[in-house]
Image (cartoon, rainbow, N blue to C red):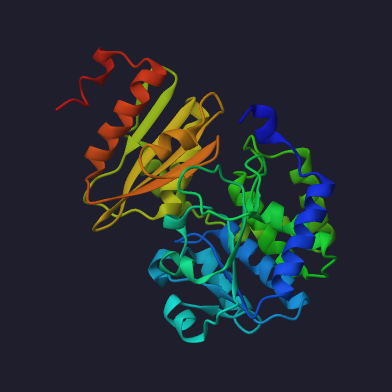
Length: 349
């Protein structure tokens, strides 16, 4: 995929065709289920809520499937879930198993790979799966003809907002705020290279709907305590030439995915590519990676079982230590960035 393809805008005809396709799919279904990636962030929950509004518009019963422990959901997402609990139905996969039928469809937002979604074990139940996403596709992408995937877009929230507008759905200020927060999060406050003129057009649409930038910002964890955690995490970062920054957290300390992602964002200011490794739980290591576009960071993460887009990527690895994952990263990046042997002496066994 060329840079022009990655950055291309959604064409009006493509949006019109996709609208017609999902309208027909929803109308011909029994129930609509919506899911997103595990450990959902603001972009994930906001885009899922937007799809739910489309199903509501077409008078279809719909449910959002989330199977995550409260401990793994950040405060901004939890506050949204609390606020919308009377108007949207969020269920677990166990609950889904009790209400599923033979003619249900599934929407997946902010993810396109089977191993990332909350209802991974039940994908085979659905005759129709519709994906709305902004991450690159690869061999793990779910097989379906119903895909609205634009890696050049800033976020799933940007794509879903465009679809909501195509349906002429009169969503309120609260949903506009959530969608705006999703865009702000995934663009790192519009500093990401995926922030385009189309992104700003969508943002203006949300502001016209009553979205408030200050309120959207409150949903994103920007507390002093968070900044301290990020700074503590990146303090021992190793820089290889001016190109690569790799930060490895302690194998004994558990770190939230939000802190790991924020650390990667911060380090990207000082290198072509930044990678942050941290332990999520007793059996899982997380890696967040960022790039200035000189290398497609999703390809680096794919080699570790993850994915992403050109500028942002991530993966989760089971059963290894942070040091072991760091060494794998160094091995992957060494040939790409010509890291000299003498610069690796501290990382060798």
